[in-house]
Each structure stands twice: as structure tokens, then as C-alpha cells.
Image (cartoon, rainbow, N blue to C red):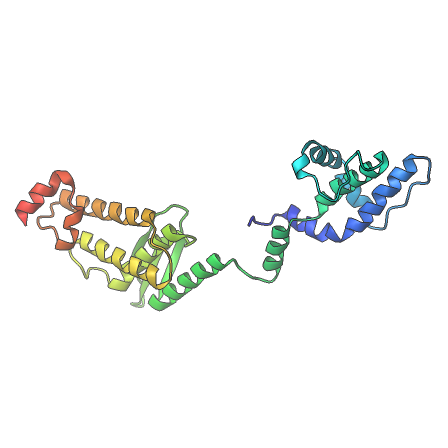
Amino acid sequence: MRQLGLWDAAMVELAPLRGSIERLVKGMLSGGRGGKPAQPPAGTDQMVAARDLRAPQVAAEEVASPDAASPDVASPDDASPDLAATELMTLALTNLVEPAADVVADLSSARAGVKPPARERYDRLVAHELAEHSIRVRKWRRSMSGVAFQMLTRDGRVLRVIESPRPAGPMSAAIFLHEIGHHAIGFSRYKPRCLEEFHAWAWALAAMERHAVPVTEDVQRRVDMSLRYALAKALRRGLRKVPAEMMKYVPVQSQQRAQSIK
């Protein structure tokens, strides 16, 4: 469902004026045949004046596209020219002020403070994990990257801090939970550093299952690439013994060397 903009909100507010628009259009056409033009109801003249430039374009689209025509509009063969013109002009104007059903539903939900189910689930995930581990978010990142660190205050308190994308889908949730995982398992608990990455990802995947967030193929690929990168960096920095958990991530060009060291 699409998000509501200012135009959609305004259209919902103008929807009750549909009946007034119909009477106004019919009065205008009857006045063109020599009768006295009908006076528009109070409050509709400014609305019609603001949108009369758009009405011909919408009416033309309705005529040119048979599939888009309303079944309630009589065809030119079955109705008089005045009736057909009245229906088309009324349809053109009311289409400008009558919102689609999904727009009304979105606006009603927004007014009631109701969030979409997926948004609620991810918001609950964030609130739970931050409170559970006493973690602060320094910054919500726009990129699919993150970092976890600790800060020592002057009075000796340790602040747990992360940066990550705000969870809105499986990938962003995985990265968020991975950074939470660094705090959950404890810094410097696992050596070397690549092994800590392994356990942080294992914690994140388990947390995704607890929160009923699907572990997609894209997430699995991201975990694999992250651990291969972490191990390759450790090997470049002189790692001499590859942990058993990381053997499957050894680069092909280094696999023989790693096996011999082990």
C-alpha cells in the first residue's frame, strides 16, 4: 500500500463534496442550453476553480481508455449527448476528490496511530533487544553496514553503543542483530577477532529465528562473505592457526597453507 502524501490527504477531506460537484456540473450544462446556471453550494466554488484545469485531461483519459471506464457510465449509443457529457464531467471531477480504498485505509490507520504489521514486528524487535542488552543506537545508518563499540564515561560507567540500519526487512534486521550480538557475547571473549565475528553472526541468526524473521538466501550470502572477509584479513595480518569454526571460510589460495599450519 502506498504512503499518503499531502494531496491524498486533501482528497480524502474533499470526498464528501461529491454530491455537490454532481449538482454543480449538471447545473452548468443546463445553463449552457439557455437555462439559468445553478449556483454552486457554499464551499465548492473555490475547490472546482482550483481543479478545473485538470478535469478535461482526466475526462479525455476516461474516454480514450475503454478498460478504465466505469461500468455505471452510459455509452454514447445508449444515452443523449448531454447525459453522456454530464456523466463524464462528473466522473472526471469526482475522480479528483474520491480517494482509492487503499488510500482511505492508509489514512485511517495513520490517524489511529496504527502501524503496518511488518513495521510493528521490527519495532518490537528493536525495542526488545536494545532494552535487553542496555544498548544505545548512536546512529541509524542508510547503508547496509554497522559497528559495535563501548564507551567509558568519566564516572566509570560502560556505555554499549551500536550503529546499524534500522530494521525494516531481513537484511537490515540481520545487520542490526549482528551488532547487538557483539555486545551479547562480549568483546574480546573470542580470539582471534575473526572467531568473534563468527559467533556474533551465529547469535544474530539465532535471534532472527526467535523473532520469526526469515533468514533469506541474501542474508546467508552476506554472512558467508562477511566471514570470508574477516578470515582473509586475519590471514593477511599473520594469523598462523585458523580456528576450526572458520576452516570452511579459508580462501582457496590460502587453503593449502592453512591446512599445513594446522
